[in-house]
Length: 249
Length: 311
Image (cartoon, rainbow over all chains, first blue to last red; front, side, top):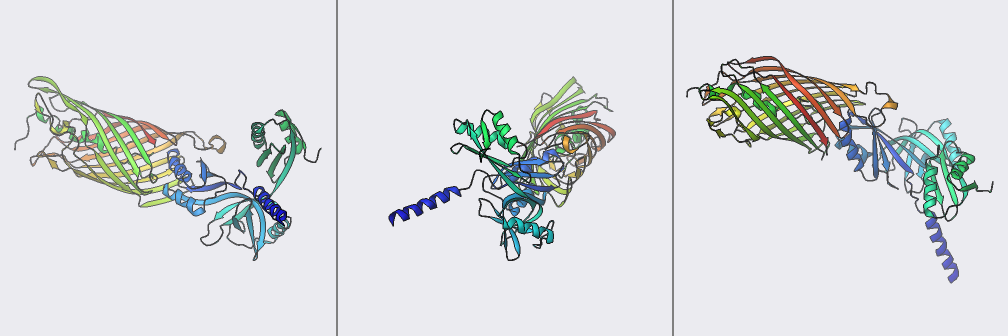
């Protein structure tokens, strides 16, 4: 009995560590359209105000496009109200707010939700450019298939705030997330693993790369199109390591 | 009280010009015109500093005194965004005024150098129309010029004429408004301003009214295609401005000085280089029309060079 209790506690601990939030936020960028922004000198105030929003670790303004892209800190997503307030305090007008979020689809009460991976948050999903939860027949078929498979998806859309419920996303684009795991030999320490992770992160088509030194494994995620294993193996071997697909090929 | 004798009143006809070196830097802190006020926003809690060097020369003298006036002015302007609509300006000038003039004792140079009158203003945005890559703004402003500059300096010839003093000695209210229309390619500013000069030392400078226009056109990059303009590139603007300035006659112990006041119209070409952090600019004001009263000393030109920086 005592050993069963110990095993249960151990299982809970293992599960907890397994579910611990990784170093990446699953909503990593938000783009806000800023009305009135028409000269370089004015962008400084916009950058400063947006960077002061909780959860924002960096801001890139694109003057021609009239946008500010917010790079987010781990696990923190500012609300659209906070973003609009920051743009207003900078002296300008916030327009559309767009983001890409990663998660799985859930269907409840005739509404699709995107449950953000590794975070306790979700978005209501709307039809493109609307706040209508009826997505249209074609979209519902695709969404139903993805939800059934509990596929991990990346949704890009316009963010809408909500004072007494989850925020909503008008879906512009939805793509499946693909994952490839490779076995890597030749890493000598954590530093070499970090170096390899950094290299893979820059490879074309890679959304996220993570390298586990202890498990000798590199996992690469891509959105929409799977990155070819041979290209990844080639990149890893170019860095001085040996790699093979996780099933031994 | 009789009018002061010739050489002592030599500076009377240049009173308005001397105070232009500080009065018209007010409100022009944000990227906008060089000699024109703008209605562009200052973010809440944002600080902008502007430093300028101005050089004024006036040598066209209709009187027999052969007056030559040179003024170096170094106004520093600090602006603070109290809110996104309310900006507070402080103008802190340092000046060096020198007048060479024929006197019964020979040719003399009179003048002084030091801190001038500080000006404080508030500007509030009452109209804001924002679109992608474009904005229109309307902002009235009001404030006061304070008597911080020395107004009772003397030299070997006695008390300096009031126009050569660094300060007026009086508290002088200012009111005006600015309108700005800015796109990614150009900017247009128009501003009107009135300064109510009050009396001190039995002397009252004439009120000053001005109407300023500014047009800035982006010269570089000439085209603004996406692949050449990632992020926030620097802009080089060609600038042309117009300054129409009217000053009423000065009053000396209640009598109006006939050799003071008048109307001047400047055309002002210039250039600005604008980045997200700083602005570098230069302009020269060339008097196209000078209708000065009596024997007022006419201005040759005013050169301005300066910078602005986002803190």
